[in-house]
Length: 306
Image (spheres, rainbow, N blue to C red):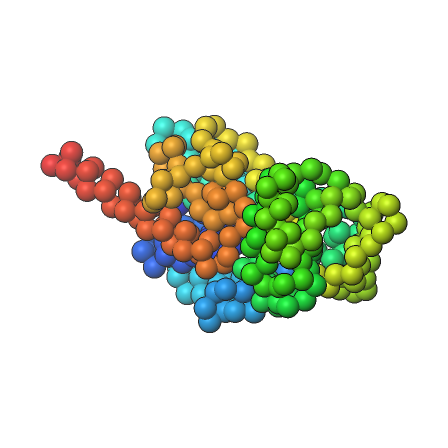
């Protein structure tokens, strides 16, 4: 059987793409190895009617909804290789199974690489986060820290100041803030510490203190980390995709990549974390784009045969 579309990735983008394709009566397989970026997250926010939901509960509900549509199948496998042969794509899983499909939607997301600071993983997802829009409300009005070692430090400090008036930016030994940026931040009451961080302390994931290598410390109850983002999937393929300046897969407004028949949506396109509602919306758009392309191909074929 030749599929209409293979959706690679079972996060909100891939799930919503599969939903729209199922409702469009498209033979679809959703590949999901269930290794999400937000595995440490206990609550997801910003999605109307689902604010505060656990990511796995969100996925469970979504998969139950997909089960209503007979043309959608979920395969709990990791895709190993994608190659294009003439007008079809061959999708090979790690188990060696091969599927033929007319279209591909890539929605495998990104994975985060945290700064190399002792104990950081103990607090990440509990009191240290990556997205103020996702978790700023829960940390509002507390003494917070921004941990950023790169050019994103200035922007992140300004952003987080929206949720607290007690903020310090820690660059972990990096000199990433210009003199002008430092003057502006300090004028808004934002403290700056460029010392190397020795460790974080606290209990059960709740941050209490940031300790520096010079034995000084600062009391904090939470904060935000500027992580490095990398493509989550390590697919072998002959797709020859184009990437944007941030490392995400470049697409047009209809989620189409430079390779005909291949679409991308969600985190892997923007090269960083997006809210669930945005990723899901992009998945919807990608699916609509796929359906539109399949309809045009059908009518063009019939016209040529007439």
